[in-house]
Image 1 (tube, rainbow, N blue to C red):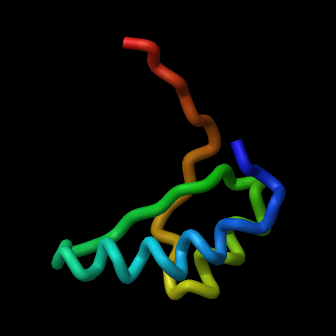
Image 2: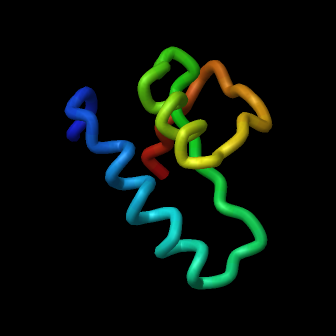
Length: 61
């Protein structure tokens, strides 16, 4: 896991156009509400907040 190393901006700068080139109607990304640096990176990359989820679950099945 690379959390806290400042990679999200680079990932968004490369990943968003790569995904957009495939022609989807929308691209959705998510981060924990407490992760202010990643939320700020999403805003800088042009993403807008459309909702908030305060608890994530990991399913093993």
